[in-house]
Image 1 (cartoon, rainbow, N blue to C red):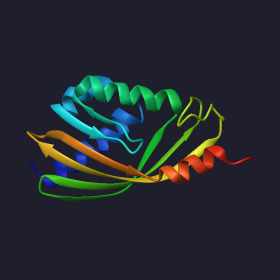
Image 2: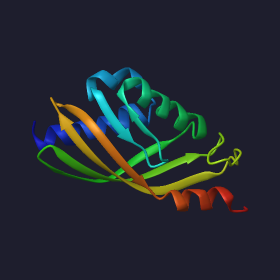
Image 3: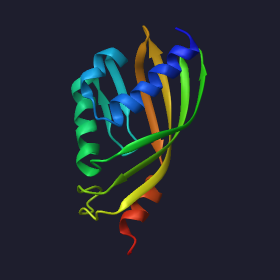
Length: 137
């Protein structure tokens, strides 16, 4: 698999799957044994577990949007630096919906196998996110 193919998979992972919450493309993008560690502290395996995480995020931020700032790819690993945005409309970290817009930084490391994504490990600025949710307007 080429580095350009990996970059293409990452773009589809964020633009097509996350930004549109399109779980129907899991099998195209992800291996069956796909492992995901989200920045909100959840670890999932497989399509069902990851689908539950996607639903969890959509419930908290129905308009969640990922913007790719940069991708660095080498061999079977890639790194993406991101900006996440959304409106807080569902309970998160025990914080009731605030209807506040949020924006925070994140990064993800991707692993690939058989021309699909096999693992993603995400680290986001959760402290900054929680601070935004708790701030008074």
